[in-house]
Length: 121
Length: 111
Image 1 (cartoon, each protein chain N blue to C red):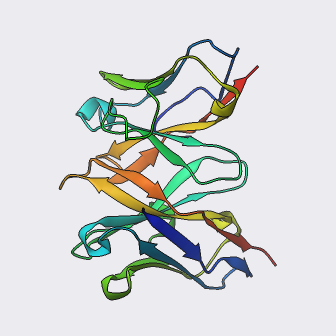
Image 2: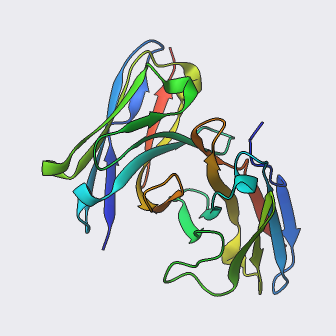
């Protein structure tokens, strides 16, 4: 059974940093594309970042240059390093196992339970 | 404003049928990119309902179905139950934005 365990969320001041982690189990982690998706209070789901099996990375425009996605296949762990955090980054962040073919037609077949990030002074 | 447009809310009586639309453009759904649907109940993680336009993952009841035509897609739910109350999202890829995009979400209320 697939499990994605998110951690690392918390309260941080504007301009601060936070690192989210996601430990995966139940599948061969290195074989899959992985992503982060967030949901801000009162808003909908928003794609944040994706990393391929080969380490190619993609980012939503508002987080480019501030967030870094990475993976440690030896530990089946996905990371999201978030710097220069803003109030509008406040959201529940979900780790997501991503399925699909070699093109951009990817979807999320499993989600973590989410990690709350609150950016406030 | 989301690239994929969904109605903000729908309300339906138990046992009835509902369809939720997802309208895109020539750079996403109309370009041939697939549409996927998720259910997000309050306080829990989202769940995949439909992938690649009209495919159900194992464990998803056949009450849920998806379709796609032109620049739009739809999710249909039949035999509505109280447990179906949730937010529903469509998702695709946009070649102009070079990004994966979600619809704004539709809140389904079972009366």
